[in-house]
Image 1 (tube, rainbow, N blue to C red):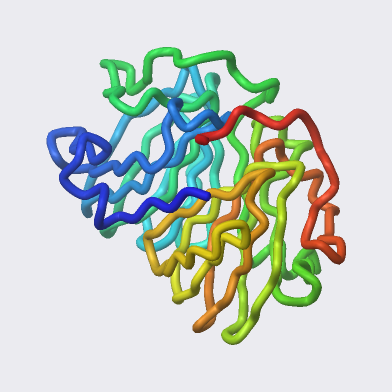
Image 2 (image 1 turned 135 degrees about the vertical axis):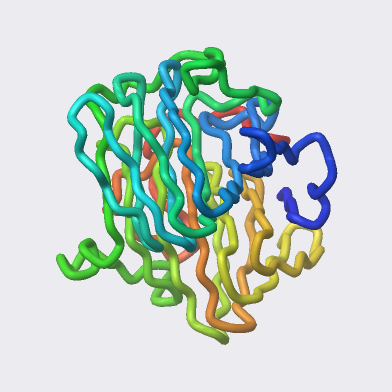
Length: 273
């Protein structure tokens, strides 16, 4: 089990100031962590206009707070950004990002970033591996629309509610879920067939490594990773909201068995340890 905190990463080489300091990117997971994706916590100051074109990657952005927009250069279509919007761009999607207010996002790249990349003159990153099999152009998902369609599932033996926002059929090499756990829940989990990354957006909890008995407190802007050798207990001390990513990606229909296991959905990557 691996835990990374924002406090520990601040001021390290994992925190980059880019675009003249107008954007701060904290690289929680990079290529060295052995997963098929990397994860950045990104803060964009108000009033920014950024020309971007990820020719060598797919990027999924989960908007946590703030408002802005993304304009597709080829079509001129403009997507408003607000909390609960997830937009995904790829090699065909030259786009213009605008922040009307300070914006806070979680950014996931596949293939995973090395961690020290800076944007070139086209707003791209240098290639860092093989692209996922996804074809096509930018697409957008909205949490409120998914809930209205009845797509929220009860999982973890009744202990959590999840929206499977990105799944195996999206062909990005990872899946992404929005997960809400009520205060006072205790769930024993064991992802024998996957690596799971959880990024805490709100609430407080503790995660116990069942093998060692070590207890890890987690709070907003902490990230923890569990894998095939990590039976663990998750206890919510308050209502908790997390972004959950799986590699290999989930199909979207899985539920936990009595041991807290999800069925296999593909080859298991090396992982961070």
